[in-house]
Length: 184
Image 1 (cartoon, rainbow, N blue to C red):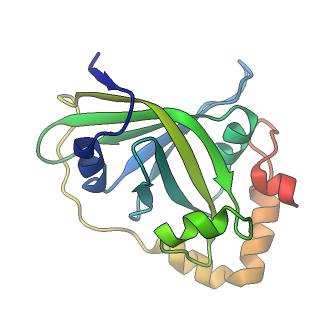
Image 2 (image 1 turned 90 degrees about the vertical axis):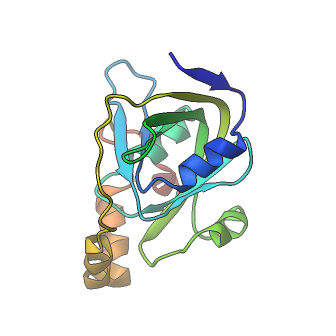
């Protein structure tokens, strides 16, 4: 079952900072609703305090995290070591989206590299941390980050990105509004 902590310890922060990928999971309240699990990379995750984390979120084909955290706040992050000691770390908490132009944006944005395709920052207040062994997690070598997203965003341009968000990021798969949907 692992060990549990009520806050992010310095060793947890160090572990997080060494990972090249993390996973974020959210779910709607409806039992028919779809659980979302997304991999994230590109050095976009920050531990802001022992109880608060955030990640810079790029425009993509869905916006489930925003919809689910808007509805109920529940969010889980998972980090796995793919090299060295086999560890898994999970952060449990309540999350929310911070949108460009909002008052909170000016507080959180300086922690990140903000790109033209940054759609929001997801912030989470963490109330439980779990560590466990990662004996079943395979070893992988990190080769580098992909730049496909940035090439795609550059080709779309500012107007194309706005149109894409309007078409694909305002509601969840299950029809829940996202923070961007409420802003529109």
